[in-house]
Image (tube, rainbow, N blue to C red; front, side, top):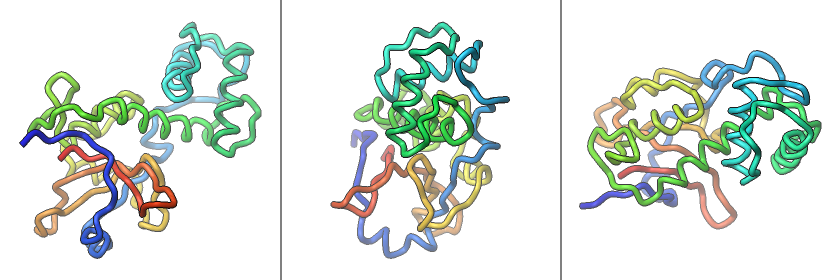
Length: 201
């Protein structure tokens, strides 16, 4: 069978066993790419380039990747902050960086919908396996994850189902052995469903 990366609705049978079968992993400052200080007008360097790349990915901003945080970059940052319910001050602090990283992760994931499933696959060229895809997607955000899902489940912060947020990883015990053997990424829910996630099966 040709498995593909897809967005799927939660299945009723999985909802019934979610508490005992799924571990939720949340991005935290310790797992996100380190930004040593807030970025604002006048900031320069590689961190600004990464910021501009993410804004282009998330908002189709068409920023020049020059590493110079100028007035146009500030306007785009303010627009992004407003869209996320953050104070639109044009300063990229921890909250703005976290929101941007999350949205960039989701956009990156969406760009690979339809790629073939490949056992052990870790790249768009070879195809993706579940943990290989998560390692790749997070790696695009300069976040280092272990290779396999069981090890990925040991990093980050465990959160409850009621506190899960888009960009969080969901670790599954699909065969009932008591060990993690699958990973997906939660991407949120709408009024018409209980939630959706990226999967590579």
